[in-house]
Image (cartoon, rainbow, N blue to C red; front, side, top):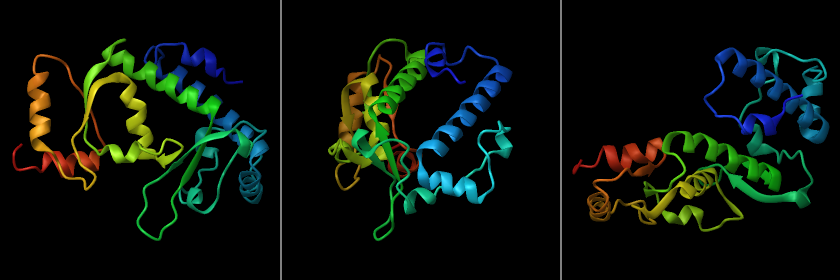
Length: 207
């Protein structure tokens, strides 16, 4: 059985590829069995596919499901009363969004794993942080987008955090330049999503 606690206590880059592959296979097989036993919709899908999760499989033999399934079904493997946070994918008007439900244990484990990974790069310190986004995406802490969750998660590594886009997603170039000058002799943590960075920063005529 996959030992999550033991893995989270290790340096995230300390294992050889072969060992990582073995652990990944064990983890995905265990998760497949867990969700099969605790999520009725998921069980129905695997039963229709004729897949028996009790038989350990290679990664390529496991049932890969289309991401759109999360738009059509509320897939839960825990009691609704234990859900503390719901994350939504971005979606255009009129379309369903994917929903990911987190209970307290999952939320804590996500934070622990993120901390282990990031501190391997920056150490146990907080850095001045620029977020290439608007703070409006994190205002509702109980139900917000995966984008907002990403920002909120990484913000624990930042200090004097600045959001350089307003609510209309316009870049405050002067605020960005002022911040960079303030910390010009220090390391700065920069966070943003690729498409937003490309559109708002890389293509800006002052860069």
